[in-house]
Structures are given as C-alpha cells and as structure tokens.
Image 1 (cartoon, rainbow, N blue to C red):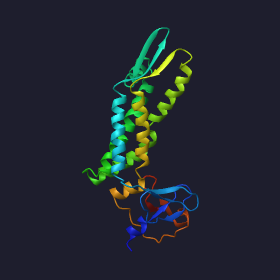
Image 2: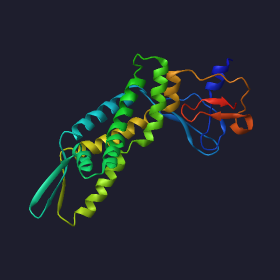
Image 3: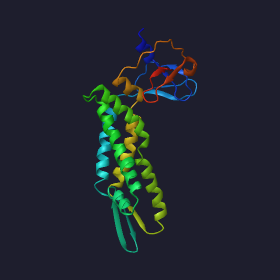
Length: 234
C-alpha cells in the first residue's frame, strides 16, 4: 500500500482530534466521528452539477436583486425607495465610508467571488494546479466572511422597528435577495471540502504508521485546517 493511499483513507476529527479511517461512502452518505459525532465528510450525488446549478441560480438572483428597488417607506405622505447598490452611496455621502466599504466587500463581493470560485473549481476549468490550490485556500478562508444573510436578518429586524413610523414595503429585488442568500448557503453545503481538495491535488504522503482510534496529538499528527490532510508535526 502506498503512502498516499494510506493517508488518503484517514482523517483527523477537527473537534476531538481522533484519527478515523474513512469508509467507502455511497451517494448522500456522510462519515461521522465515532467519538463526538462531528461530520467528517459527505458524499453528494452529482457533486459537480449540484453546486454548479445552485451557484448559477444564486448569481442570477444576485443580479436581479441589484436591478430593482429593495425596500420602500412611506412616512407623512412622502414615499422613498432604495436599491441595494444605492446603500453604499448613501453611507459614503453620510461619512460612513467604512460601513459602505464593509457592505460592498462582505455583503456583495465576497459571496459573489466565492460562488464564481466554486464554479471554476468543481467544473475543472483549465487552470494551473497552483492557481487552483490558491483559489481553494481563499475560498475556504473567505466563506465565513460572506454576510449576505446577516444583512438580510438586519433588514428584517429593522422592519419591525420602522413599522411604528410609517408604511414599510418590499421592492421587486427583496425576494431575489432572499433567494440569493438561501442558494449561496446551499451551494457551500453541497461542496465537500475533502472531495474538492482530493479533486485538486493528491494528499501528501505520511511515512509513519497511522493508528485509528488514537488522537493525532499522541501520534505526532495534525490536520490541515484548510484541506483536512493528515500531516506530521515538524
């Protein structure tokens, strides 16, 4: 048995550090840690087509959400409405440049970048292997910084507070934005980290024998936080 195959069939639980031998998974099955129950990896059916479909529809919903009014408000007979792309302009005008930048980066650009990156990686678009690895690292580091759904939650809370001052309504882009938030979350859910990295590059070999059921720390092993590869200390 070669070192690569020996290491590729094992994974360290990111919660309790237990070394687990990965079984052969059928579609829609997942491997869990026998000690703490953490999901280690999931085998999705249509692992390329499923995230591709979700990502494309999510990006289309994002486009629609930026084309039409988002919400409108009527107070004292005066009506006003705002589009998503007008929000940073208002913040910049009111000397809240940091908030405007935050909105553009983490509410719009980061989620869109992650979706495009997923499309490139799962569909094996012709790129140098180093660029693929770089994009995958950026993807898994940035995915927690996408805050589209947090912005949506803030808007819903604001609705409750502003209803006391006038009539609040949703515009044509509100439903597409809700769909975008749901679809981009579903896209991330359908991309298994272990599967994607195995598709990009083989796992580095491990020279020492691996003991299943023993913590990685006791064996001098650690797990890469990005690609889940089992690595030796040092």
